[in-house]
Image (cartoon, rainbow, N blue to C red):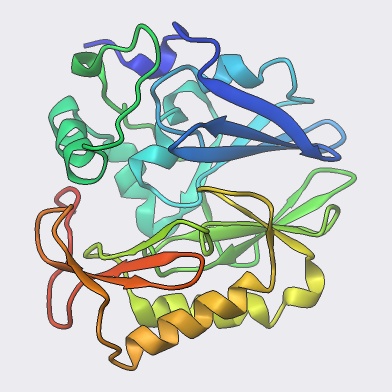
Length: 282
């Protein structure tokens, strides 16, 4: 079975634009965004998207040097194009998951869980051929690792919560935090691997370093976001952790989940004592 990640049937699928000096956003509208950061003669690609189309083709004209891929976490919508690149890193706890890949059957199941009412596909895309080919990691990412790109240095910050190995990236050159910790959309803390207390610890961790950045570049939804949002999100998770009643019971992913609504975002969590959504056997 061929993989759709190598296909470039819809050149309009990716929306690529420079948002900072040397930072490009690669949008897959309605799904995710990846970020390309250029150094003097090196390029860092933060996530590789859904794997619906060939992200390598979309960025080849803007990359300034050899590309190193770093994944914020292992989920399919951020690792779909990994197979197209040679130098890939992710947190040690999730290496086995990107090397495993995902079958067409598994992906169809995942898309049915969370995207059944909002599934938009590229022109020429064949869902029956969609798979994510496992790719061997070149290195593991640890908290505090620094990627030296000449004129800029990017620091990895471990920020578990959404997944065990979730990682954010601090670019001091542009004073930006590239992260999955915040969004104006829905926070998914309902997976088996998700942990509300870990979210709280990660938020407190980056807030303690907020003098090092001015803005947030999230991997879902509106960007950039003000760093003040970190305090709003922390307050929300602390209320949830303290036992606040949910605003609704949600079954869109199958098993019962709790939905909490706040002024500019929502949080989906597993009920106390529940196992949570298991996307694939781990």
